[in-house]
Image (cartoon, rainbow, N blue to C red; front, side):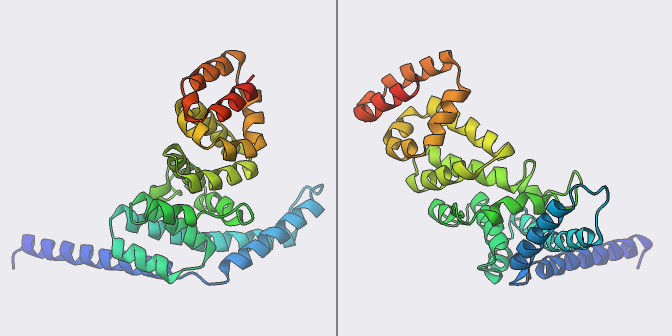
Length: 272
C-alpha cells in the first residue's frame, strides 16, 4: 500500500471515529434526569433567598457558592441537551431528534426546547407548537431557557438553532408570527405572556404589538374583544406612541371599520 493510500485510510478512520463519537455524545446528552427541573427550581429559590439575606455582605458565603455551583451543574446538563437538539435539527437528523424528544417527554425544559426545534424545522403543526407553550401559571421553564443557553458565557455558547438572541426571544417571535396570521389560540397565549414579560422581553413584545396595530389592523379588529380584555396593551400603546403615531393609527383603522364597526369605534376612542 502506498504512503498516500495509508494517509487516506488513516484520515477515513479518524473521521469515522469522530462521527461515531459525536453521535454517541449526542445520544448520552439526550438523557435528562426526570427530577432535574425540580432540583434546579429548588436550588434557584434557595440561592435567591440566600442572596436576599446576605446582600449587604461584600463576599459570597460558602452556602451561596455551593448553591451557585449546583445551579451551574444543572444548567450545564441542560445546555448539553440543547446543543444536542440544535445539532440534530441543523443537520436534519429528524429521527434522532424525535427520538431524543420522546425520551424526555414531560420534562419541562426538554419539552420547550424540543417544541421550538420541531417548530423551526417544520416537524410539528402550529397547533402543536401553541399547545406546548406554557400558560401564565407555568412560565418558570420558559424564562429559564436563556439562562441555560448562556450558562457558558461565551460568544458561541448559544446553540446555533437558537442564535443570536436565544430561545426565549425566538419563542416569543415565532408565537407572534402566528398571531399575525390570525391564530386565535396563539393570540391568547401571547396576551397571557404579555402581562408576565419584563425587561428585554417586555420591550420585544411592545415593539411587536405596535407592529400588529400598524401593519395588521384587520387582525386587531377581528380579535378586539381579546385584545381589549388585556388592558395593559392599550395602556402601553397610549404611553409609547406619540400624538402623530396615534393619529396615523386611527386613520389606518378607519379603512377597516367594515370588519367590526363597534370594535373600530372602541379602538379609535382608546387611541386618543
